[in-house]
Image 1 (cartoon, rainbow, N blue to C red):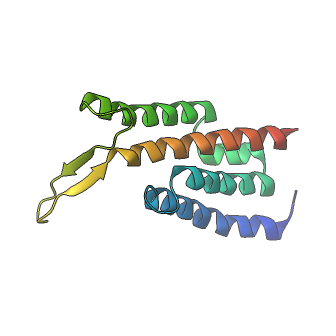
Image 2 (cartoon, rainbow, N blue to C red):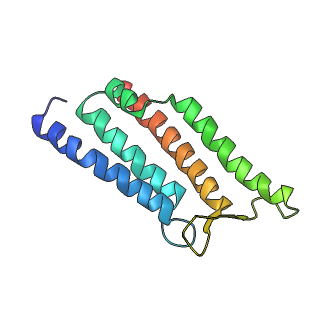
Length: 138
């Protein structure tokens, strides 16, 4: 498709959609959002780019091979569950890491379920884009 209006709109919408998908990812676990819906929205941004420009341009924008991205996401989600096993809890039990920040009275708290959500985000993003790119190349 060669539409100047579509290409211009995608150029402005792409970063907004990607930022909103990251917002949904980070908002995640106990509230609406998380890795699944964030990954779908992120894939939507790249799918729009593929519609407006081309699949190859969209692949170059991603900068990673989809199979590698999916594998890294699966590894990250699995390792976040193994942390619970190492601490003597059931698989996928959440563990908190406290990181002290100089000049701040309370430490920064980071949970393992964030890494699980990031893994889900990457898997959903890559699988959805594999499907979209395969259909678009036909």
